[in-house]
Length: 72
Image (cartoon, rainbow, N blue to C red; front, side, top):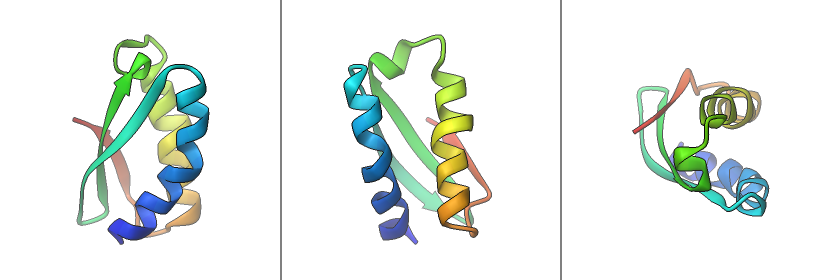
């Protein structure tokens, strides 16, 4: 499943990079995806929305086994 998650993150990554940020996959365990927001995304006040409505929504849409996404 880690490879599937990384493939979806590759689709999302260009949008984050346009704004000076990025996302790093840390771990996938029991349907929970742990990511680290980097660059501008790491300290952005909108990071929570980016994580839930952007990254988590896209991962759940493309990989039904994903239950939640958390930032570490």
